[in-house]
Length: 149
Image 1 (cartoon, rainbow, N blue to C red):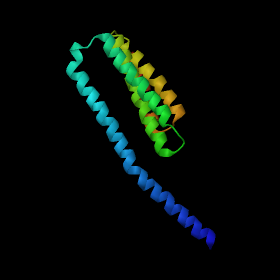
Image 2: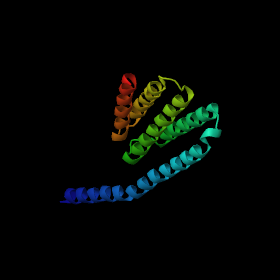
Image 3: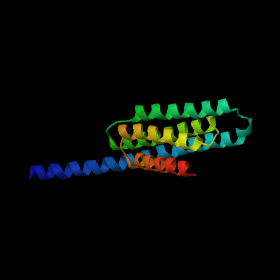
Image 4: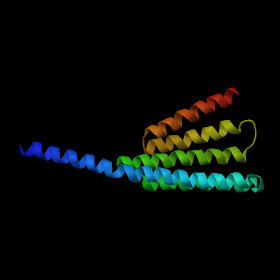
């Protein structure tokens, strides 16, 4: 009887813990998207005035910052793993954009997507999630399409 009571109590505690982490997780995703939207808006307004080296440095530094944040946020706890996976995908996107603006030639999309695939693979290896898996699929599909077109 006591074991059943303990199991029910443990189940309720787990459910309450999941509910209490849902709101902060959603807020962290919204905060990251707000930050990215702000950076995107600033870059869009100043795009013609920014040199190629500044564009490359901006996207490279963003990629490094997101990847480092993913390493710091990573853990075996589900919420931290999902957040770090999100940061790894952002890092892969930033690195791909850095390559794309650095090498504006015919193979630039292929090279950028290849780097996105490699960084996504590193991120997925560290923190497996559906988002990381989707990033791998999209980058691999994009690489194939870039070769065809």
